[in-house]
Structure formats: structure tokens, C-alpha cells
Image (cartoon, rainbow over all chains, first blue to last red; front, side, top):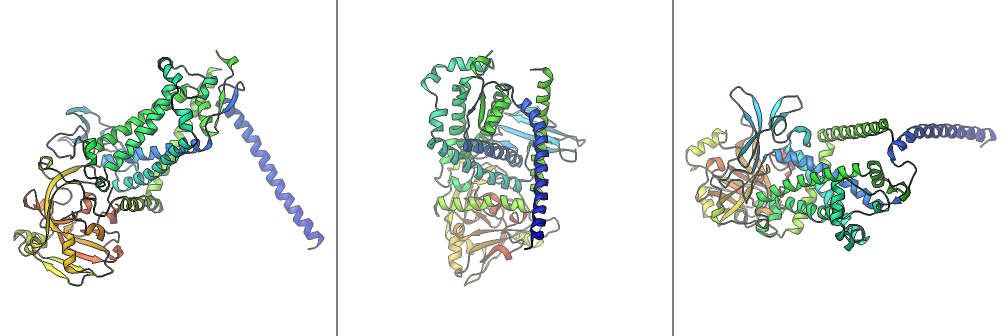
Length: 318
Length: 258
């Protein structure tokens, strides 16, 4: 290779690297401006306090996976429910007993459609939300839950089932991994099991919650007792119950030990419990997000993304 | 902290959340409409099939119920009267001219009358019917054991599936006859029967007369009604839409154990 050729190549390289450098510089400038603004927005505490590593990487990853999986399972589940929007108690749906809950669309003589929610035989008008709601074209149609709450939006049982069972597998794998990790790393033993002291502080914790009082200092490094108990209840009771009730609806899994679903009062009860637990989990998510917001939204959010929670130094306490 | 700042933060948060949900939901809809994504989701069915076959013993029996659990009325779903002149002619004559054809990968193809079928080893069972839609009904079924019939026709070594060709057209113009298929493990299960009686009486037309499949460890759409012909095949790709059943050709899973 001649000297000139080498120089040309070098120049070319330099030109490229110049371009890259300029781009990096530009990106930095922009991100500084945005980041500075974001940073201001993100941290309530400003520069006071110190960062504390609260959530290890595996927990953060599995937490956000769970957000996606549970959301998908809920929305596709509601689409599946819409295929037969009624709930029963017992072994079958046809026992000569009326359903516990029924979301019905009614069409009167003039062709006017209305939505009715029937709970234990009592009718409630729920047009526009339950029983009848607007479809993509804006027309009122008979359907259990509205299209904006179902995945896919259209009434499409076959595809909803595909979404549901695919994500059920991911959810189960994520759950098993989380429980294994949490036991092996002693996350459960250290962070989730209430200590003797926790049990003693339960009354105070309840009062604190009712007053929306939350620690921001060193006490924020640990979960409080109600938080611990709630997480334990969700992780070791509600979510496993959800899976077992899901499997209880499977005619194949019911044959594993003939009659095991009768422990839960039969397959239709199992379906009803699956539904109730789903909404209990939604309630948990609402309370969870509410608590996250009022106890320092950005600080909490940051700690579940980067792992670091900014602990207010005691001097900053009000 | 100024009040303005608070509002901005809340505004930003709301906008971020709203934006994210629109992107996510729109994305989900687009994924649902694609051809590749539902196929990826279909991996869930394959995993379920493998896992359930792994943990479920071959002869694990579906739950059977006492007569007190019987549904007062056994619901008729889908077709309740096939729109098929040939079928209606058979029905008008009390199915006296009905012949169940058994062919495909068998050593001895057969045509059986209802009397022949009633002469086969039978089984009576009170079982729960679970529809893919979510409801269940309990019925008392009596029918010929499919396994016994398959033994009588001697399957060829490469036989893998039993296809059930039915009399009920799914389109209003009389086309798209219903069909279904099961693998041999399910075909030889003791509770798999070709039912000719429901709740102690001749199977009514609305529930699939003269013969319907009972496949107790899977969902209702697998249990073909108005069965006219059994075809034993090595693979399902050559039959109708190629997915092993009328609903399967329309996106439902071939394995309906869940």
C-alpha cells in the first residue's frame, strides 16, 4: 500500500471519527438539556440524601416482565370471558340455577341495544361499559367487557386464547424463576418475611398507611410490615391460586386426579374464582401503584429501574 | 418546590403513561393482525400439549359424576339441525339407512349400521362437557368404544390420526362440512366413545344424532357431532384446511386440553 493510500485511508477514518464525535457531542448536549430537566423532574429530593441499592437486577427484570405478562393475561382473559360472559358456582353451568353474574346485551322492540349486569338476579343498567358497548366503528354492540379492555379489541376467542396461554407460560416461568431466586438469594427470608419487630409495629403501620405517612429516611430501605404481608400474599397465595384455577379449567388437567376440582367446588366455581382473583390482583396493582405514587413516585420508579433509591438523610426530615 | 413544577411532573407522567399505553395497545392490535405473531403465540399450544401429555398418564380418567349432577337440559351448541338434504333424508327414516364408513389407513375398511355399532363394546359415563366458550354441562353418555372399533378394522402401521367427517355444513350454502381429528392416544382412551345415547335416550339430533364423539379430556369443539365417516390418516395436512378440524382451520388449537 502506498503512502498516499494509507494517508487517504487515515483521513477517511479521521473524517468518520470526527462525525461520530460530533454526533456524540450533539447527543450529549441534547441529553444534558433534556436529562437536566428530567433529572429535576425525577428527583423530589434534589441532591440531598444518598443513593441506596434497593432492588437487585434479577428482581427488577422479573418485576417488569411480570407487569407485561399480567397485563396481557388480564386483557386476553377478559376477551375469553366475553365468549360466555356469565359466572356460575358449582360443577356445571346448567344446573337449573341462575348464574351469579351475567353481563347481557338486550335489544328492545325498537332495536335499541342496552347493557345489563345481573348480579344474584338483580339487574343494573351498565350500557356503554358492561353488557353493551361501542365497537371500533362507534356502534353499540352486545359484549361483556368493552373492546378497550380486551386483547384483541375484537371479539376473537381463538386469538385471545393464544395470547393468554402463550403469556401464561411466560408468567409461570417468570414466577418459578422469581421464587427460586428469592429463596436462594434469601430475598424472601431477608426482605419479605416479617420480623418479630414488624409484627409488633403492625398497628402503627396500619395507622401510618391510613394517614398516607411513609418513611423517606433509613426506614425506606426496608419494606414495612403491611407491604411485606401483601407481597407474600400475592406471591405465595394469589398468583399460585390463579395458576391452579387456570389449570382447573383444563379438562386434561382435571383428569390428573379425577375430582380434584371439587376441592374448589367444581369447574365452574374454579372459573369464577379465577375471575375474582384476577380482579383482586388488579386491586392489588391499583393499591401498589397508589402507594408508589404517594411515597415518592420517581424515587420508587428509579429504584425499580436502576436499582438505586435515594434515601433522605435524617437532617432533611421535616 | 413550586406548584408549577408539580403540575409539569404530573402532566409529563400522564402523557408518558398515555403515550406508552397507546403504543402498546396499538402494537398488540397490529401484532394480532399479522400472520407471524399468532404463529409465535401458537408455541404456547405446543408447549401445553407436550407438558400435558408428559404429566398426564395415558389412561388417566376424566371425572365421572353421580346422576344428581346431571344438567336438566343438555345444551345444544353450534349446529342443532344440519342443513344437509342427505342427512335430513337419513334422519327422516330414523337413520335406518345410516352407515358409518371407516377407511383410510386400515386393513379392513368397513361400513357399519347403527345396530353394528351398538353391538360393539360400549361404555356408559356421566361426564362434564366443557365448551371453549367457558360453560360446562353434565350429561350421561352411552356409546361404542372407539378403541374397540379401531381394533376391528386393524390400523396400518403408519396410522397416526382419526379424522371425523361430519354431516353438518358450517356455511349457509351447505358447504364446509364440520370435521375433527384426534391422535391415537386419545382415540384408544377408555372414555373415548362414539355416543348414540344421551341421558338414557337415543341421541337427539340437536346433540349430534346418530353418532357423536365423546373425548372427555378435551374441549367441546373436538367432540364432533353427526359423524358420518372415520378416516385414518398419517398426517393432517391433506385433510380440508390442513389443521385437523373446522375450528382449527380458523385459528383454534388442535390440542384442546386447556
